[in-house]
Amino acid sequence: MPRIVLEDLTDPAHADHLRDYTSLKDVQLRARREPAEGLFLAEGVEVVRRALAAGHRPRSFLLSPARLADLEDVLPADAVVLVAPVEAFAALTGVDLHRGAIASMHRPPRRSVADLLAALPPGPARLVVLEDVVDHTNVGALFRSAAAFGVDGVLVSPRCADPLYRRSVRVSMGTVLHLPWARAEDWPGDLDLLRRAGFTVAALALGEDAVSLADFAAPQRLALLLGTEGDGLSRRALGGADVVVRIPMDERVDSLNVAAASAVALWATRA
Image (cartoon, rainbow, N blue to C red; front, side):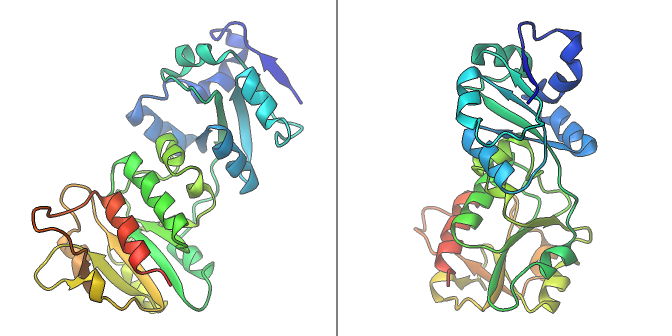
C-alpha cells in the first residue's frame, strides 16, 4: 500500500491529503466542510476498525508508527497511509490526538426517513428521535446509549448536530457508524411517518400530564422523542407525540442531561 512518511507537515506535495486533517478544533469550520466535501473523520484504533468493519470507504489514514502496527491487518491494500510521529499531529490538527490514529472516510449516501423505516424489522422495534440536540458530545453519547440498549435506528431533526462530526463519532465509540440513522426533512411532520409505520411516539419531557416511566407500558414499536439540552422539546414536537413520559426522580432535581436521560429511558423500555 502507498505509505507516505511525513518529515515536514507543511510539504505542499501532500497538501491535498493533509487538508482533511487540518484545524480539527474549529467546530464551525469542520461542520461546514465535512458534509459539503463528503467526508467524516474516525479517531482512535477501535473507531477506525469499526468504520472499516461497517463498510465505510477510506480516503486516507493519518497514523503514528505504533498505530500503523495496530491497524496493519485491516488497512485496505490501496489505502493512502500518512505516517507521522504522534507529537507532530497537534501542529497539523490543532488538537492533541493521543490515540495516534485518525482516518478520513467518505460519507455514506444520505438516508431518508422512508429508507430508515424500510430497513427496520417488521415486528418489535425501537427508534430514538432527537430534536435540535446541538451539542456533538451529547449526540455521540445518545448514539452510544441507543446502540447499547438495542435500538434499531435514530432519527434526527433538521437542526440537530451532525452525528458524523468527529467528536460525535469519537464519543459514540464508533456506534454511529453502524447504527442506522436519518435526518428528517419535514419537522415535526415526519413523526406522522413513524406513526403510519406502527410506532407510538413517546416524548420524554416534564409536565403535569406526563406518565411516570415506572408506569409506562412500552409498546412493541416505540419511538422515544428527546429534546434539546436547554429548552427541551418544542411545543410542535410535543403536539406530535402520542404520549408524554417523565423519569421519576428526587424533587430537588428537575431534569437530567439529555444523554443521561436517554440511557435511563432506553433501559426502562427495553424488551
